Image 1 (cartoon, rainbow over the protein chains, first blue to last red):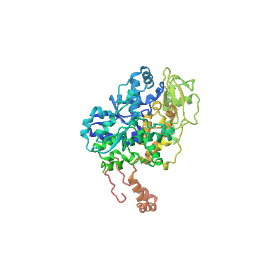
Image 2: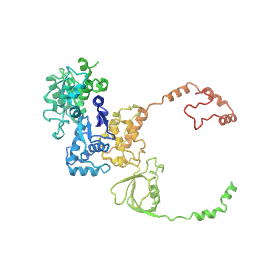
Image 3: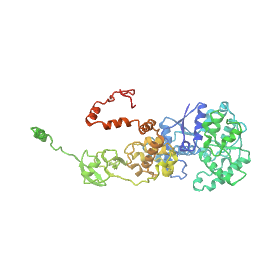
Image 4: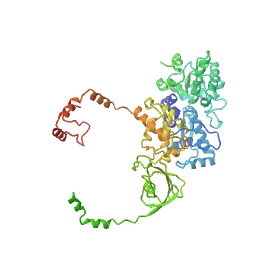
Length: 292
Length: 262
């Protein structure tokens, strides 16, 4: 089965280790992630100013491309792309006045009114494949690996785009358990990683990272699993400083959910591109006999 | 020569003159930089401007639609859309408002090309304003070459230098995209950088060329060249006339009779 897929710019540069294991895993599961053509940047950040419609143009144009290519459902992988595309879609569906303004500005494109359903790959795993069916496909259960699910903000906030319970999400926990690892719940799993503050105030990033990582550590986690390239970057960069400053902190591997999925499905670990992850996640995996 | 000239001036002369009656030229109104002129129908915008009295010492380049020097914007009556063209290619239409934009100030990064790799970050570092693009698509609408300018910008953001280079291949650097850009990007300079990186760092090298250069340097052709240098002019001409040529219809496996130097 083919699914229209929107990668986003970062997955083509810094986060190939998020995309490539996803495509390979979905193929094993009988789905072809088919990249829509002529896509552009998702808009990166949803603009909170009510009248700032120009920043809705980028996400809406991608949704128009999807419709043009005969698809009414669009799968995303990056949390930020998921968030901006889904929010722009809601706006086009619900707000007639803004919809008309945007459509008339984009007079080079067909009119759009929110026909595409924007989903995240995690939702495909949960709703279209199902955890039980997925469990049957697991060839290498990630036994003994203690992983803390980290959601960040973009999968769950605001409420109208959340793919799971905003207060007590469980979708990543289900995935971690399905691939045979131990899920370590911790209270900071929905805390902000610091986001784009890494550009304006890089100093605060390690403080955010310490809050999140020390909490996960105290609950017994050996690694974090997440979906967002910006969270991965911030928590990686933040750690770099923490390792220097805190003698007791040895660093914590960060995995994309698609890497754990691919590994558990028995795919060649090359497809996971662990070399692009922060630190050295491979040594932990070797310790658990999950890598040759 | 004189005979020929006489022949030409023969009895046909009067007939030609009769045929060359000046056709009635229809004049149409155009507004050049806001001022109304009447110019002959069928002229290009550039010719029309010259007819109206403008003299181009720059901004006219090749007059053949390939140099990008005569980017022009115009509007037709009753239409809110801004149109673009090359002044040397587009013919005048009644009541159009025209102005040429032969140059548009745009940020052009300085770099030492030898130090650049094929990494996407090279473009990001030299042109960080790339990420100011909001996908408004004004650049694409402003391209007289019909290039999907915004798609090429998207390709650069995605780190796909090869794709940006492919899409922008027919760019003639007129700068109209930049003149319309909401995010103040210099698209055409970015594309030039992309094509340079693509050509020098991504496109596969022709390995047989290096081999051939090596063979030449090692003197493979020295003897035959020296021999030719010693030959007299007449003999050389004979050799040239009698040389074996590859037939136009030759297939890939064609070989000359003498294969000593293949």
